[in-house]
Image 1 (spheres, rainbow, N blue to C red):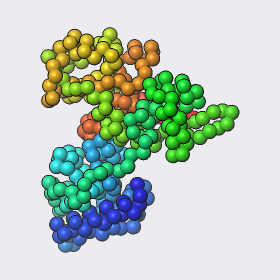
Image 2 (cartoon, helix red, strand yellow):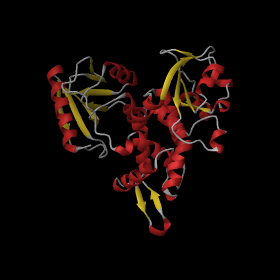
Image 3 (cartoon, one colour):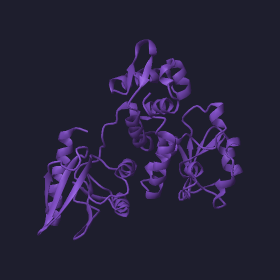
Image 4 (cartoon, one colour):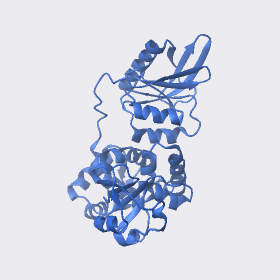
Length: 340
């Protein structure tokens, strides 16, 4: 993000917070951690509180998840700063114990001697969001998913990459150019292309996927007749696989799913009928159309690729899911994205 924009958001949020609460606020030199966006001091009477600030122009449930994962379990002393926090997100952040302020005057601070909770204030400007580079829009996300899930795929021909990514050849052309331009790929001459900075690609893919691609693939929400029906149900005959929480439960034996995610191919109606799933906007089963080409080896697996499971979990910004996502990252993804 542009540093000037970042500083403008921080200054405005601090000024609005001071006017609304009377609490003195100031920016401090970054002594604790040079990797944080800023450090902030709050003072009331003789008491002082110090925060490490994470600044995001627009904060959503989806991009809050990766921040929560990065911060970890010890969230005291952290402060999210943004343009606007919706009431629903404010409630979620309060439950997570993560302090925030925004430029609309909404805030949550829970420190010894200082408790503030304000929500419901509307943003002063329309939320137009950050410009999304085309690499992290739907077509680009499909290609990135294929590249991340298939090590060294970037060294194959564009036609082979297009077939695996289930996308047009023209999309591969500009995707590969953008990867080079953005510092995510290098050309090693006779040795071919090499994907680099994969950890950063994963981080951005995980944020963009639930906002850009998943809504376009979403089929509907359903309700099953039986609780825990997913435990003894085989989806492979229906050209489908488990994603999200049930996939995480099967991969880690740790999570107890509250929401069921299914990624399906062409036999969606058969899947719905055979498993007696009823359309229900408040149901706990979501069906998403698969956006990649399933090879014979993958077709035998009951869960989607761990990267997609990880993204589904992180997007919930739920403590238990994020803890499970950490396990999946360490066990399944860390080795995959390690630089060659």
